[in-house]
Image 1 (cartoon, rainbow, N blue to C red):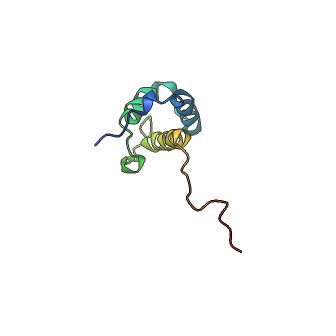
Image 2 (cartoon, rainbow, N blue to C red):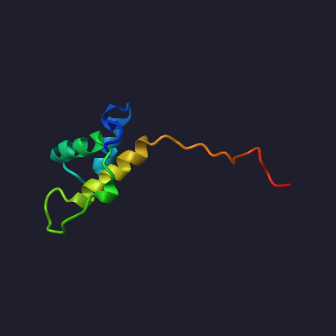
Amino acid sequence: MPGPDLTQHPEYEHALAKGMQKAGLPDFCRYQVDKLAKVSADPDRLQCCHSGCTPCLQDVKTCLRTLYKAIEQPKRRWWSWPFSRS
């Protein structure tokens, strides 16, 4: 089941540029990454074929992980300060 459409997130463009730069993906790969981000594809479920194709799916996975991490909302911790051990 597809997740939320991440292309509508306000930080999407900046996060995508950061992810593509980190993975070393050329601009023509943006369409493929956009399609995967639109359905919030799980990078761990994508498998590289190791045939040397362009773009390599391993690079796309790196881009998606960076993208997801950049737009992820911080999680609140219930055990944070002012609880201290005395």
